[in-house]
Length: 167
Image (tube, rainbow, N blue to C red; front, side, top):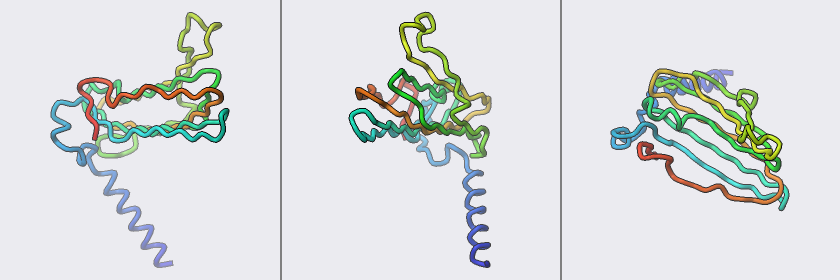
């Protein structure tokens, strides 16, 4: 009983210490100098179970430093008739690491990618725009996309514009 209580106390203390730490504490000062945002993590993995059963897992974490970096915190997932989001979770954290918002699949808005051509395309855009005004803040999310049929790798760019840094 004492060991369980001690272990719980240690975990609560560590969690409190982590949540009180600034989001920019672990980022090199050279990256912060001319950046609007810093990508902390971006992993994309494909699990090919069969030619018609493929899972794409995406994990993304970014720190938004100022208003110029807000677009990097927007979540956008594109799907069509051969793709389905099977799971999604995410969070927005304040500068001190405290949880601002927890996101789930139901929180994503879904709209046709081409609203004028709804009958010609099954493509949809699922998106979430964090509403937070104090900087810096972080956005983290992870999702699994179930793919059936042809596998096409997405084009990859390390950063989307000049003022985005990678940690």
